Structure formats: C-alpha cells, structure tokens
Image (cartoon, rainbow, N blue to C red; front, side, top):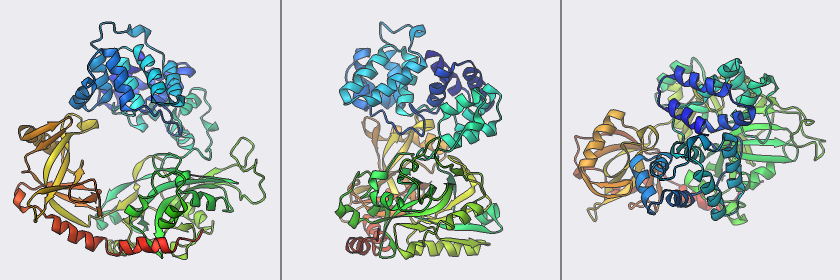
Amino acid sequence: MRGWSELAERVGGTTRTSEKTSLLAGYLAQLPSAELRPAAVFLTGRPFSESDQRALGLGWAAIAAAVTHLAGTTAGALSEAYDRSSDLGMAVADLLAHRPDEPDPSHSPGIAEVAEAFSVIEAASGAAAKGAVFAELLARCDALTAKYVVKVLTGELRIGLREGLLEAAIAGAFERPQAAVQWAGMLIGDVGETAILAKEGRLEEARLRLFHPIKFMLASPAEDAAEIVSRLGPTVWVEDKYDGIRAQLHRRGFEARLFSRDLHDISDQFPEIVEAARGLPWDGVLDGEILAYADGHVLPFLTLQGRLGRKDPTAETRANVPVVYVAFDLLAVGPRSEGLTRSEGHDGPSGPAIEPLLRVPLVERRRRLEALGLPALAEGGRFALSHLVTADSAEALDRVFDEARARRNEGLMVKDPQSGYSPGRRGLGWLKMKKALATLDCVVVGVEVGHGKRHGVLSDYTFAVRDEITGRHVTIGKAYTGLTDAEIAEMTAWFEAHTIRQLGRYRAVEPTVVVEVAFDVIQRSTRHQSGFALRFPRIVRLRPDKTAAEIDTLQTVERLHRELQFGAEYLVTAAARRPVRP
C-alpha cells in the first residue's frame, strides 16, 4: 500500500492531465491481478466498487480513538488537526508522523491486505469490533500510507483524478481502446473488474447486470432559453423537472429493486413501488423520479422528505405521503416476463438476455419506453410516463417552463433527441433549466473552512435576515457556491480579521458583509433561527453597496413563503385523505 500511496501523492501533485495518465498507466501495468482490482477501485476514492452496496460503517469516534492511541496524543488532537486542513487523511498523517516507533514503510500492508481489512471492518458487528480491526491496520502503516488508507476509507481521496483519466490510464496500461474500457465500465459499474478484463483482453465479455445499478447520466445547468435552443436546437425535447428524488428501477421476473442517485438500494423505503413493479409485464431498467403525489398534484419536496431514510414505512406514513414513480428513460430491456418460473426470473448466466440501450439515441429509447404502456401521471396508478413536449424557439421554451412551474415542478429538462445515455457524465446532451424563484439580501454571520479544492479558505457562508420585531439577525441558510476563487480568497482575509469568536471549524464573524442569495423554495425548518430554510441556496454576488441595515427581513421571508408555498398545507391534508391507488 506504500507504493500505491506514493503514486497517489505524485498524481495529486501535478495538474497536467497527460502526466497523471502516464503515472497511473505505468503503475497499473506492473500490478498482479490480485492487487490490480483493489488498486483501481481505491483510485476512485472508495473502499469498494461503485456498484458494491457495502458500507464500512466506521465513524469519527472509532477513527479518532485509534489515531489518538497510536499517536499518544490528547483526545482533541485529531479535531484540531482536522480544523487546520479540512482533510481527515492529512490530519491523521500529521499526528502519526510524530510517533517514536513509526513502522518501516517497506513493511506496510499490501493493497490486497488493505482491501481484505476493509471487508472485515464492514462485516464486523458493532463500533468496538470495527474500530479494533481499523486500529490493527493503522498500526502497520507509516504516516503516508495511513494518510491514504484513511482517505480511501472516508471517500475523500482528493488527488484531482477524474473517472475519464482512470479509464484512459487503464486503456494505456494494457493497450486497449479507451472506448472499449469506457463501455465495459458503464455496463458493470466496477472499475476493478474493468481493469482485470482489460489486462486479460476480455473487455468484450462485459455485460450489463440487473440489480447492479448503472451510474446516472447528469445534466448541465442552464437558465437562458435562447442559449439552450442555440446549443441543442433547432427542435429540443422538453420534460418537466420533477421535485422528487432520482431513482433507477431494476426488474426481472419476480424481483424488483430501486436504487438512488448514489447507487444505494432504497427498495425498503418505497415498498409500494417495488410491489407494483413486480406485476409489470417486462424486464429491464428504468430511469425516473419518485414523487410525493396526491389528488392530481405533485406535493412539495418537503412532504417527500418524510419518507426518505425510513425503512419499511408504516401504513400511516404511506397513506400520508403517497408516492409514484415517473419514468423518463429506458436504459435496458429484456423479454417479457409472463410465464417465467421463479428461478428463471433472476439474473444469471442462464437467464434471459438484457439488452443495454445506453448507446441508442434518446428518440428510440423513448419510443421503446412508451411501448411499455405506462400511463400519464394524471391518470393515476403507481407508475407514470414523464410529460414530454417539443420546443423550437426560446419563446416556446420559456412558455413551457412557466407551464411546468404551474404544475408545481422545479423547471425543465431539455434534451437532444439524438443523445445517447452517458452514465456518470455531465454533458451538453441534457440541460436542466431552472430559475431562481427569488433572491434575498442577507448578512453573513458565520464562515467555515471549505472542502476539496477550497479546503484552505473560508468558503462556507452562514447567512441571516433581520427580524423587524426584535431587531436580531436570524439565520436562514448556508451556501457554498457562487463566488469566484479570487473573491473567496479576498473574503477569507477579511473574515479572519473580523472574527468575533471561533468554535472549531466555525467562525462567528462581524455581521457586515451582505450577499445576494438565490433559491428555489422556502420551507419551514427548525434547523435555523428564522424557522425557515432556503432550498438550493447559492450566492449570486457580494453586495458591497449595501449595509446590514438594508438586508431583507424575516417578515419578507414569511410573505414569500406564503406566496411560493400556496396550497401546500391543503395538498398534504388531501394526501392523507385519498392515497394513490396501488
């Protein structure tokens, strides 16, 4: 693992794409198969492959206990080191580097040994057992190796390694076409297995496997209708952008499962959808959205949140928050399921072939999706087909946008009908058109050190509005995006000089800096002092022309909430009265 860590350090130390690819290819080419698989997976910044549903379940307390014991430091030393860098791997290395008996780097655990330790941690029952395995692994690691073991374990590798670079490196290491590596990776969702197939010259054997989720295709944001039409025109396909959660449905025979955008199995959170899917007359994979829906209306996302994370929801919860699955893409399809025996209904070498449609143009995927016979959303039932229209001008697109908002949806998905499906990629074949419902002028009252490329600057802003009755500033949200790197660097210096008090990573600052904040929805929340929270807040700009006395008020927020959330309370009540038919 020491050699892998040195590689990661070198890759993270260069910004040149060609150099990163060359370093990776040279390293991967000389690995035996037993080490190649986990080495490739670790380079994605994960302990297990993306399609692997396992999670380590190792928390901060267990990591801190092991590090503190090995380093012989006080209980708060790791937190203090983390506050300085916002990087847990780096913080661990800083503490362990001062051990009087640091292990010999040449005796660090092998890559396969680390992979096995991760599996043992995942399988261990209870925090103490997991922590003991981790402590034993860490005790064998020098500071650099420990740094990267923790980075992989926590999913925060941060060495500037995009998926495309790793695919290019695998192709280069084994002299295979990069397109073939990319296609195999899309189908199987396991870069370690993809690397093995490339090494052995068997990339053509890659097959899509049901119940192994495919990475979701992503859309690029856009707000200007004229720009969108010029990019994708002359005629674009337009779907409602639903205010729910993205989900992939896999079905074969008597088995059906739902997977979230982060590829986790969420079937037990929405059992009514899974149960209804078992009765569908086809096999395949759908891409779609789970919505809270009742009485012909999409309910606010806040309503759907009552279902998220709840396994095996009660009958009362299911009645209060009824859900539907709206399909907008067909990613794979197989033979119809009537007449299959239970054993034939499962994926396997002898099971019916599933045809991947990722390379098929959207116009053909939509035709085959419509052939499945899903009803329109307004027709009721547990499954529905997304609302689709065309637009051939900016004026038409703006009109469709307003109509989608009137149906209580977030905005629009605008798509090139000839586009393929690119798992895990954000291209220009799909654009998401959203417009801020409003903006608020707020004052920054707190800042925190950022993460990733912004780990050394104060980039996370907590902001507030003014309560006219009490005159106090009351918090309403936090934003991480919107300002340039130069603006953040300049404001970091200002906030450091105007800190009132510091609590770990958080700094309370003088309430002087005014920012204009855009958002999509205002919703009730107990998280903030105002009693409200902004959904998808982003900083539009700094407002040096305004003082804190000129910011918006809590009373303005309350008025906007009434206007923007009109009818939400009625809809939730209606949902409890009349659930969707199964």
